[in-house]
Length: 92
Length: 92
DNA sequence: AAGGTATTTAGAGGATTTTCTAAATACTTG
DNA sequence: CAAGTATTTAGAAAATCCTCTAAATACCTT
Image 1: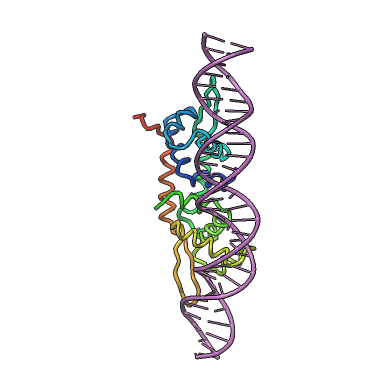
Image 2: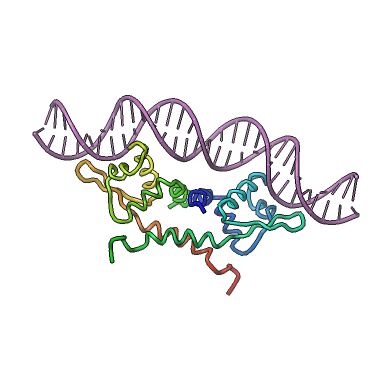
């Protein structure tokens, strides 16, 4: 899956904001873009980064492209972090 | 604290590997460096990125610099991810 | 088919990142 | 203090990233 891609995707504030917007359900590319100062082309670039990182997926309807959170990847990241919680590996 | 810095720090494979090395306790800069092909200067750069992101802290002893995980930041990141688990914000 | 709306792609510019070598700093010990 | 070890800083080169404008694609509606 690629933690490098995932964390790089998460390192940009605009992309993190997009993810937060998507918490409540899918949104079209245009609706997402309207929340930013950047051009639609730039937002489209950020969406493609999130998509490559599997943090979102897209579905098409009419001439809209909807984006949605892919929560399964979030779980994988949580697992990665869980390694650091608590146990040093030679305890117990 | 700065999620941008944190996630950017985590996006590099060498830096993630350093964090894993530190799971079992502190290590000196030199001991960390000896696990990589890169020059010591480059490893030092990576350590400084991790330090700026508050993922590690350093302590000096003799002429060694020891690095250690700062687990509190990991908890903050876990909290950030927790937002995405489950509840859509207008439920309940 | 033509015109309109939604979105992506291409290409370029500027900024940031990663790595190196060489030099500097810091501390220790004879 | 001098010499040695450990580490960081400075500066430069190559790679990657973010943003824009302009053009292309895709789909819908009349």
